[in-house]
Structures are given as C-alpha cells and as structure tokens.
Amino acid sequence: MAKQRRILGLSTGPEQLDEVIAKCAELSRKYSAGVTLLYVREERLFDLPIFGNSTERSMESLHDRLLEHLRERGCEEWAVLAYDNDPVDRAKLEAEREGSFLLVSDDHDETDEMVEKIPTRTLILKKGLPHRYERVFLALDSAYGSDEGLDEVLDFAAGAEVSCYMDYQLIVSTSDPSLDPVVGAMTPDVLMAEESEVIDIRKNAFEQLCKAKGLKGHFELGEHGLVDDILDRSREAEPDLLALVTEDRDTLMAEAAKEIAPRAKVDILIVYNH
Image 1 (cartoon, helix red, strand yellow):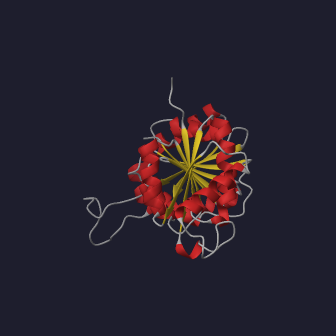
Image 2 (cartoon, helix red, strand yellow; image 1 turned 135 degrees about the horizontal axis):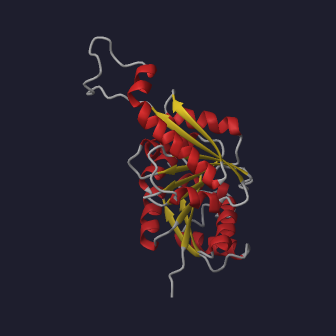
Image 3 (cartoon, one colour; image 1 turned 180 degrees about the vertical axis):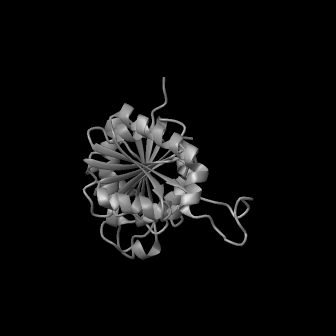
C-alpha cells in the first residue's frame, strides 16, 4: 500500500492560523493528503485570543485548544504539534521526518530563512488575501532542465490563467580573462555578443516549451537583477499567485527566492526540480 502524502502546515501565531488551516484543508482534498499542523508560538503571542490568558500557558493546554479549533472546522483527523520558538528549524525537522511533499506557511519574520533551509515545495500565504488563484505569474529558472516543477505548478493552479516568464541574467566574472582591467566591466551589448548563442538557445527552448504547454511566455534579458526583475514583472501582471520554479538549490533563482519571498505582495509558491 502506497504511503499517503502529507502536507505540513506552519502557523507562527493566531493571526493567520485560520488561513493556514483553510488552505491546508483545501489542498488535502485536492491531493488526498494527510495534514500535520505545526504551531510554533512566541512569548509575545501567549495572551492573544483563543490561546488562553496568562494563567493558561502550558503546551498541553495549547495543544488541546488547537485540537478543538480543528474539530470545529472538520479537521479532526489532522496531526497537531505545538512548540515554543524556532519555527524554521522545527518545520525543517518535521518536513524531513515525515517526508512532507508540501509546506503551507503563514508569512512571518523568518520567511527568508525558511526558504533557504527547507527543501520541500513551499507555499507562503500573505496575510488577509483570499488565497484563490485565478491568475498565476510563473517565473522559470533560466537553468531549467526538466518540466517537472512547471507541471507541478500547472497542476497546483489547474484552471488558472498562467503566464510564464524567464529572466536571463547577463553576468561577467571579475576573473574572466576577457574583462579589460583598465576599461572595467563589459557593457550589456558586449556581453550579449559574447553570449548570443547561449541566449538564443535558451530563448528558443523557452518559447517552444510555452507553446507546448499552451502558455503565454515572455523571455527577457535581465537588467536590474533577478529579484527586482521578477518582482517588477509580477506586479505588472497583477497575479493572485507568484510561482518560482528553480532547477535546484544552487541556481541564481534559488538564491533570489530567499529575497523575493518576503517582498512579494501575493501568495508565493516555490518549487524545486531537484
């Protein structure tokens, strides 16, 4: 019998708890997956509503209140874990322990660290949004070598209008022997001439991929850095969801994701091909 897939929901406080629960419940039905709710509180949150007052701070009490909160929402079969502090490390440990295929998290102060440390697919819910996805802006790693992550996003947002974007960054190393030590960095025009063949190959492959998947696609030579380019194009597209598909954890896209995630104004989904 195949092992049931599991979703890990991370809540770092009551402000977005119901948003995390609702999204996990929706995705649990979609993927026929089990759910573990991980609630990691900070001391300043102890006295907030539904989680007790100063005389009711034990972890057992918090756990019981979370269970009751889930029962009221029809989620009584979920596993519940409650801890103090260190949400990223606790989420990483739990995701690895149970082999979670998806992390659904609220938007918290350690979002950038979470993106850096947690290797599984991650959906970050921005506070107060409806979390329904009709328009998706999908940024595809220029180093991509597999359709796996792209297909996962298309399945995740089935029925949504998806626009695909690739930003090819022109980068010259200071150790490059073609870099003139007197003149300094090469101009974009010179760089484009140097890399024109690679750029053409990437652009053609991207356009063919978009055509095969039936997607609107836009290929761009980056001018302002991957982070700003993606955020700017995403804002122009006005999506409900920003999806980043990165080839692995060592590409420019993976590095940019750590900065994009906390700055994005809409929900963000990060998927790794490897």
